[in-house]
Each structure stands twice: as C-alpha cells, then as structure tokens.
Image (tube, rainbow, N blue to C red):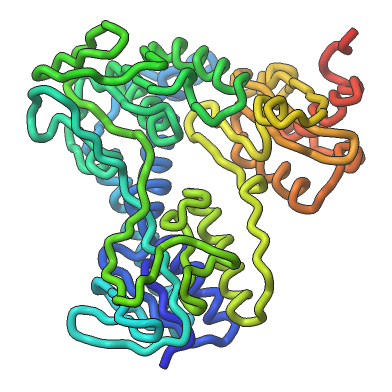
Length: 446
C-alpha cells in the first residue's frame, strides 16, 4: 500500500509527489497524457518560449537605435513552433527523471477511483492510504451561431500545433491567455482583434492597469472591443453584438479554462469540491490545483501541493490566502499584480493610500529603451494591500512584493532596504517612498 496516490502530474501533482517523497512517504503518481501537465506542455512554457522568440525578433528589428546595424530581419514560424515543442520535451524528460530519482512510481494510464483506498487503471488496482486529485483544467470551448469551417475555431491547445500563421485572427477574451497570444501574433505580423464581453480589458485587473493596457494595444495596432460578444459567423465574417463586423481567418477562444472532472469515481458520492484543508467530502481524499477552482495558476497549484502534504504528515491547518498569489501576463512589457485592486478597496470600504511611480523615471529603463509602464502600490501605514506593475521585469518585481506581503512587512520596512542602482527593482523602493511623498526621482505631490 502506498502512502499517497496522486492523479495528475501537472504542477500540483508532481510537486505533491516530490514533497511527499522528500518527507519519506511512498508515492504513486498517475498521468494519462504528459508529465508536467498543461503548464509544461500546453501553456506556460510553450507560450513563454514563443514570446521570447517574438521579443528577440522585435528587438532586432529596432536594433539600429542601439548602434547595431541589422538588415532584412525575418522569422521562421515553423522553427519557432519546433523550438517550443523541443523545449517542452526536454524539460518533460528532465522532470520525469527527477520524479523517478525520488523513488516515485509513475503510472502512465488513465486513473479512476474505485473506493477511498483503491485507484485503478485499465489493468491494475493500487491500494493507497490517501488520494490527491490534481487533474488540472482544459480550455473552455464555445460554439457560435452560423457557418464556419471545422478548423476555424482554435483553443490555446490547438494554436500550439499550427504550422502556418493566419493573416488575421479574432481573439475571444482579454485575460492572460488572450493578451499573450495577441502580443505573439501581432508581433508576427498577424492582424489581431480582441473581443471582450466585460466592460474593460483584463477584467480582473486594477483599473489603471486596464487603462494602460488599452494604450499598449493601440500602440501595437491591435483592435479591441469591450462589452461585446460574437452574434454570428458566416464563413470568415464575424458579426459582433455592437453591430460591427470583423473579417478573420481564425478565432482563438481564450475565454478561460474549466476543471477536468471526468475521472470515474466510486458510488459513495465523492464530490469534487474542497472543504477545510483542501479535503473533499471524504477525509483522506484531497483536491488541489486548477481542478479545485481556487486559483488556476501553476505556482498556486504547487503551493497547495506542499501544504496538503504537510497536512497529511502533521495535521497542520492549511490557511491558503489567494490574496498572496501573484499573477502575471507575459510579453513586453510584463503585467503583474498581487493583492487588492483599487476598486476592490473602494468596494470593501477599506481606507488606503496609494503611490504611482512611472518606469520612465528609472535610468535602467532609459538605457534599455523600456520606459513604458508604472508601479502602483496600495497600502496603509502598517500593511501592503496590493501592487500592480507594468514594466520590463515585472514578473521579478512582483515576487519582491509577494515576499513582503507574505511576511507582513510594512511600507516603512521596505523603505529601509537598499536597492541596487541602476535596476528596475529600485522602482519598488521609490514607489514605497512615494506613499509618504519621499520618492527621490519624481516630483512631490503638492
């Protein structure tokens, strides 16, 4: 009998498996498709690999301003796609070897739950003391009224497998997936239109982030419509709810993801809903990662995995705080946030003060011609409530805020830190000083 049986080998599943093995537990890990899950094989890693190619291409086209002479810069989309697949495969092999190195048994097959202590595959039954369900998520699929070809609608999975770029595309949704693909495709000379059903771009973002993102989209010649849906499609003509029509070779549906809940479960009515300590309604069966709907991000899933293993070992109460989970939209510049938005604070009637520090006030930003963006801090004198960043290296800077918030540092604690110069990170110091009107590199508020 294994101490833990884990269904799903994405960031939640493999993190739980490794942490449990580190703690001396026997682990069996089931995966029906790819080790690494969506993040490694169909999400985070492939898209960031493509985004890096796009960043290089864009920078090389504009290299002359840095004194670098370039001519006839072109790209090969088929090679870009081949590289992202190669990178995912290389990491997947390395991850598989790492898991095996810890003595974890990997079963590459569909797994179902027969009862509280038995997981079965197509031809075997495995006894386990505890079960962790980490089956992840899959793209939402939407069908539209009208007539269109079989391959006209693409998901974020599908687009990773195309070998030829469309000349034009309409993207449904302006969250992380939609915006990252909009940036990729527009950089590669595809005409991009975004349709968002909510009233602003990046619906869950701070309003000033949404407003600045609108400026970025316009600068990239990306068309967009908010408070808009697709009414009908006739061949490649897309009729929108605002009365406008868009011609596009494809539609990318980037309207979120939904949990994978299609595993067979036993007749005693196991419910795939989380209760205290990420348990289901069965005391020894846990549900973590995207499938529990708490926070559909890879790093959030990995943290949940660590917490659940500690609970299984020691009975430790899990206090998972979604407010401390950073989120990032990649591209140039990066968009990152953690904690409350300003509209959250206003809605909840929480008193706060804020600072707004422009990235253009940083010497390193000028040196690299990356002056677009800002750092926005929301806080009280004793507590950091939220941070919202548009900048080069925003993904690294938001981690600094996450460390501070997790450890309950106050704004004055951050003001004591010596940040290196010249860096983008010194903008963090400046933004916290600006809360008290003490920033060195911007004018005082009067």
